[in-house]
Image 1 (tube, rainbow, N blue to C red):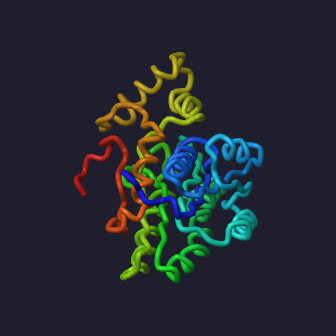
Image 2: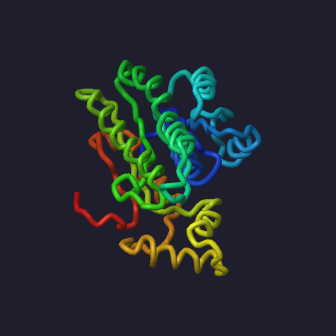
Image 3: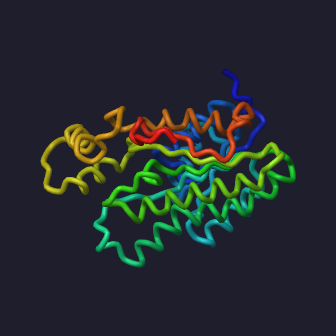
Length: 258
Protein backbone atom coordinates (compact mmCIF):
# COMPACT_ATOMS: atom_id res chain seq x y z
CA UNK A 1 0.00 0.00 0.00
CA UNK A 2 1.31 3.44 -0.96
CA UNK A 3 0.77 5.75 2.01
CA UNK A 4 1.44 8.80 -0.19
CA UNK A 5 4.06 10.25 2.15
CA UNK A 6 6.80 10.96 -0.40
CA UNK A 7 6.01 14.67 -0.53
CA UNK A 8 5.63 15.12 3.23
CA UNK A 9 8.01 16.37 5.91
CA UNK A 10 7.89 14.77 9.36
CA UNK A 11 9.45 15.57 12.71
CA UNK A 12 9.60 12.90 15.41
CA UNK A 13 10.69 13.80 18.93
CA UNK A 14 12.57 11.29 21.05
CA UNK A 15 13.50 9.41 17.91
CA UNK A 16 16.99 8.08 18.68
CA UNK A 17 15.60 4.90 20.22
CA UNK A 18 12.55 2.81 21.02
CA UNK A 19 9.14 3.75 19.62
CA UNK A 20 10.40 7.06 18.24
CA UNK A 21 13.18 5.42 16.24
CA UNK A 22 10.75 2.86 14.83
CA UNK A 23 8.38 5.67 13.82
CA UNK A 24 11.15 7.71 12.18
CA UNK A 25 12.42 4.64 10.34
CA UNK A 26 8.96 3.67 9.09
CA UNK A 27 8.11 7.18 7.89
CA UNK A 28 11.47 7.38 6.10
CA UNK A 29 10.85 4.01 4.45
CA UNK A 30 7.50 5.35 3.25
CA UNK A 31 9.25 8.27 1.58
CA UNK A 32 8.73 11.10 4.05
CA UNK A 33 11.56 13.56 4.67
CA UNK A 34 12.11 12.82 8.36
CA UNK A 35 13.79 14.97 10.98
CA UNK A 36 15.21 12.96 13.85
CA UNK A 37 15.25 14.72 17.23
CA UNK A 38 17.18 13.78 20.36
CA UNK A 39 19.28 15.33 23.10
CA UNK A 40 22.56 13.70 22.04
CA UNK A 41 24.10 14.99 18.81
CA UNK A 42 26.07 11.77 18.41
CA UNK A 43 22.97 9.61 18.68
CA UNK A 44 21.02 11.86 16.35
CA UNK A 45 23.76 11.71 13.72
CA UNK A 46 24.00 7.93 14.02
CA UNK A 47 20.25 7.48 13.46
CA UNK A 48 20.26 9.87 10.49
CA UNK A 49 22.96 7.74 8.87
CA UNK A 50 21.26 4.48 9.79
CA UNK A 51 17.79 5.18 8.45
CA UNK A 52 18.64 7.72 5.77
CA UNK A 53 16.63 10.48 7.42
CA UNK A 54 16.62 13.90 5.81
CA UNK A 55 18.19 15.59 8.80
CA UNK A 56 18.73 15.50 12.54
CA UNK A 57 18.47 18.13 15.25
CA UNK A 58 19.96 17.84 18.72
CA UNK A 59 17.51 19.63 21.00
CA UNK A 60 15.31 18.94 24.02
CA UNK A 61 11.74 20.26 23.61
CA UNK A 62 11.11 19.44 27.28
CA UNK A 63 12.71 22.84 27.88
CA UNK A 64 11.61 26.14 26.40
CA UNK A 65 15.16 26.72 25.17
CA UNK A 66 15.32 23.34 23.46
CA UNK A 67 11.96 23.83 21.78
CA UNK A 68 13.11 27.22 20.49
CA UNK A 69 16.21 25.62 18.96
CA UNK A 70 14.10 22.96 17.28
CA UNK A 71 11.60 25.47 15.91
CA UNK A 72 14.38 27.71 14.61
CA UNK A 73 16.05 24.80 12.82
CA UNK A 74 12.77 23.38 11.49
CA UNK A 75 10.24 26.21 11.10
CA UNK A 76 7.60 24.12 9.33
CA UNK A 77 6.53 20.47 9.10
CA UNK A 78 3.64 18.52 7.62
CA UNK A 79 3.69 15.79 10.28
CA UNK A 80 4.53 16.26 13.96
CA UNK A 81 4.89 13.16 16.12
CA UNK A 82 5.15 14.05 19.80
CA UNK A 83 6.81 10.89 21.03
CA UNK A 84 9.26 12.21 23.64
CA UNK A 85 8.46 10.69 27.02
CA UNK A 86 9.79 9.19 30.24
CA UNK A 87 8.37 6.60 32.62
CA UNK A 88 9.19 4.92 35.89
CA UNK A 89 7.57 2.89 38.63
CA UNK A 90 7.47 4.75 41.96
CA UNK A 91 5.24 4.60 45.05
CA UNK A 92 2.83 7.53 45.14
CA UNK A 93 4.03 8.82 48.52
CA UNK A 94 7.59 8.98 47.19
CA UNK A 95 6.75 11.05 44.10
CA UNK A 96 8.11 14.52 44.87
CA UNK A 97 6.94 17.87 43.52
CA UNK A 98 10.05 17.85 41.33
CA UNK A 99 9.06 14.44 39.93
CA UNK A 100 5.56 15.66 39.05
CA UNK A 101 6.93 18.76 37.32
CA UNK A 102 9.63 16.83 35.47
CA UNK A 103 7.14 14.33 34.07
CA UNK A 104 4.78 17.12 33.02
CA UNK A 105 7.58 19.07 31.32
CA UNK A 106 8.87 16.07 29.37
CA UNK A 107 5.69 14.19 28.55
CA UNK A 108 3.22 17.05 28.13
CA UNK A 109 4.78 20.48 27.65
CA UNK A 110 7.28 19.25 25.07
CA UNK A 111 4.42 18.36 22.74
CA UNK A 112 2.40 21.45 23.61
CA UNK A 113 5.29 23.76 22.73
CA UNK A 114 5.76 22.20 19.31
CA UNK A 115 2.07 21.87 18.49
CA UNK A 116 1.54 25.51 19.43
CA UNK A 117 4.12 26.51 16.82
CA UNK A 118 3.39 24.08 13.98
CA UNK A 119 -0.41 23.90 14.18
CA UNK A 120 -1.19 27.38 12.77
CA UNK A 121 0.93 26.71 9.68
CA UNK A 122 -0.87 23.42 9.10
CA UNK A 123 -4.22 25.20 9.25
CA UNK A 124 -2.98 27.91 6.88
CA UNK A 125 -1.74 25.30 4.35
CA UNK A 126 -4.87 23.20 4.93
CA UNK A 127 -2.93 19.99 5.54
CA UNK A 128 -1.15 18.54 8.51
CA UNK A 129 -0.93 15.78 11.07
CA UNK A 130 -0.19 16.01 14.78
CA UNK A 131 0.12 12.74 16.68
CA UNK A 132 0.66 12.40 20.42
CA UNK A 133 2.14 9.10 21.59
CA UNK A 134 0.18 8.55 24.79
CA UNK A 135 -0.31 5.20 26.55
CA UNK A 136 -2.90 2.72 27.75
CA UNK A 137 -1.90 4.08 31.17
CA UNK A 138 -3.88 7.20 30.25
CA UNK A 139 -7.10 5.25 30.82
CA UNK A 140 -5.95 2.47 33.13
CA UNK A 141 -3.58 4.33 35.40
CA UNK A 142 -1.06 1.99 37.08
CA UNK A 143 -1.02 2.54 40.85
CA UNK A 144 2.77 2.47 40.82
CA UNK A 145 3.04 5.02 37.96
CA UNK A 146 0.41 7.63 38.82
CA UNK A 147 2.57 10.59 37.77
CA UNK A 148 3.20 8.93 34.41
CA UNK A 149 -0.49 8.09 33.92
CA UNK A 150 -1.44 11.69 34.67
CA UNK A 151 0.73 12.98 31.82
CA UNK A 152 -0.67 10.43 29.38
CA UNK A 153 -4.26 11.38 30.24
CA UNK A 154 -3.31 15.02 29.68
CA UNK A 155 -2.06 14.16 26.19
CA UNK A 156 -5.44 12.68 25.28
CA UNK A 157 -7.18 15.87 26.41
CA UNK A 158 -4.82 18.13 24.49
CA UNK A 159 -5.08 16.09 21.30
CA UNK A 160 -8.88 16.00 21.41
CA UNK A 161 -9.17 19.70 22.17
CA UNK A 162 -6.75 20.61 19.40
CA UNK A 163 -8.65 18.39 16.97
CA UNK A 164 -11.76 20.48 17.64
CA UNK A 165 -9.92 23.43 16.10
CA UNK A 166 -9.44 21.55 12.80
CA UNK A 167 -13.11 21.35 11.85
CA UNK A 168 -13.62 21.62 8.10
CA UNK A 169 -9.89 21.40 7.30
CA UNK A 170 -7.52 18.67 6.10
CA UNK A 171 -5.58 18.81 9.37
CA UNK A 172 -5.96 16.01 11.92
CA UNK A 173 -4.84 15.59 15.51
CA UNK A 174 -4.87 12.17 17.13
CA UNK A 175 -3.30 10.27 19.99
CA UNK A 176 -2.10 6.68 20.13
CA UNK A 177 -2.18 4.48 23.20
CA UNK A 178 0.57 1.87 23.08
CA UNK A 179 0.79 -0.80 25.74
CA UNK A 180 4.02 -1.97 27.38
CA UNK A 181 6.62 -1.86 24.62
CA UNK A 182 10.03 -3.42 24.22
CA UNK A 183 12.80 -0.84 24.40
CA UNK A 184 16.43 -0.52 25.42
CA UNK A 185 15.44 0.39 28.97
CA UNK A 186 12.71 -2.17 29.51
CA UNK A 187 14.99 -4.55 31.40
CA UNK A 188 15.83 -1.87 33.96
CA UNK A 189 12.16 -1.02 34.29
CA UNK A 190 11.19 -4.64 34.92
CA UNK A 191 13.89 -4.98 37.55
CA UNK A 192 12.57 -1.83 39.25
CA UNK A 193 9.13 -3.46 39.38
CA UNK A 194 10.57 -6.70 40.80
CA UNK A 195 13.59 -5.65 42.90
CA UNK A 196 15.64 -8.62 44.00
CA UNK A 197 14.16 -10.95 41.36
CA UNK A 198 17.04 -13.01 40.03
CA UNK A 199 15.34 -14.22 36.86
CA UNK A 200 16.17 -13.42 33.26
CA UNK A 201 14.54 -10.54 31.41
CA UNK A 202 12.22 -13.01 29.68
CA UNK A 203 11.15 -14.41 33.06
CA UNK A 204 10.61 -10.91 34.42
CA UNK A 205 8.49 -10.04 31.39
CA UNK A 206 6.33 -13.10 31.94
CA UNK A 207 5.88 -12.21 35.63
CA UNK A 208 5.07 -8.61 34.71
CA UNK A 209 2.18 -9.64 32.50
CA UNK A 210 0.98 -12.29 34.94
CA UNK A 211 0.95 -10.00 37.96
CA UNK A 212 0.82 -6.42 36.67
CA UNK A 213 -0.89 -6.53 33.26
CA UNK A 214 -2.98 -9.67 33.49
CA UNK A 215 -5.73 -8.25 31.23
CA UNK A 216 -3.36 -8.09 28.24
CA UNK A 217 -4.44 -10.39 25.44
CA UNK A 218 -1.01 -10.20 23.82
CA UNK A 219 0.85 -11.24 27.01
CA UNK A 220 4.15 -9.89 25.69
CA UNK A 221 5.91 -6.61 25.09
CA UNK A 222 4.82 -4.89 21.90
CA UNK A 223 7.42 -4.46 19.16
CA UNK A 224 7.94 -0.74 18.38
CA UNK A 225 7.43 -1.52 14.69
CA UNK A 226 3.86 -2.56 15.49
CA UNK A 227 3.17 0.93 16.83
CA UNK A 228 5.05 2.68 14.04
CA UNK A 229 2.87 1.02 11.40
CA UNK A 230 -0.26 2.62 12.85
CA UNK A 231 1.45 5.98 13.20
CA UNK A 232 2.45 5.91 9.53
CA UNK A 233 -1.13 5.27 8.45
CA UNK A 234 -2.60 7.98 10.68
CA UNK A 235 0.09 10.40 9.44
CA UNK A 236 -0.71 9.70 5.80
CA UNK A 237 -3.31 11.25 3.51
CA UNK A 238 -5.12 7.90 3.68
CA UNK A 239 -5.86 8.54 7.37
CA UNK A 240 -7.84 11.71 6.68
CA UNK A 241 -11.07 10.42 8.26
CA UNK A 242 -9.38 9.65 11.59
CA UNK A 243 -9.41 12.82 13.66
CA UNK A 244 -9.76 13.52 17.36
CA UNK A 245 -9.30 9.84 18.09
CA UNK A 246 -7.46 8.01 20.85
CA UNK A 247 -6.30 4.90 19.02
CA UNK A 248 -5.43 1.70 20.84
CA UNK A 249 -2.35 -0.31 20.05
CA UNK A 250 -2.01 -1.90 23.49
CA UNK A 251 -2.41 -5.60 22.87
CA UNK A 252 -5.95 -5.81 24.22
CA UNK A 253 -4.91 -4.73 27.71
CA UNK A 254 -7.84 -2.30 28.07
CA UNK A 255 -11.02 -4.24 28.74
CA UNK A 256 -13.62 -1.55 27.97
CA UNK A 257 -15.19 -1.36 24.50
CA UNK A 258 -15.18 2.44 24.33
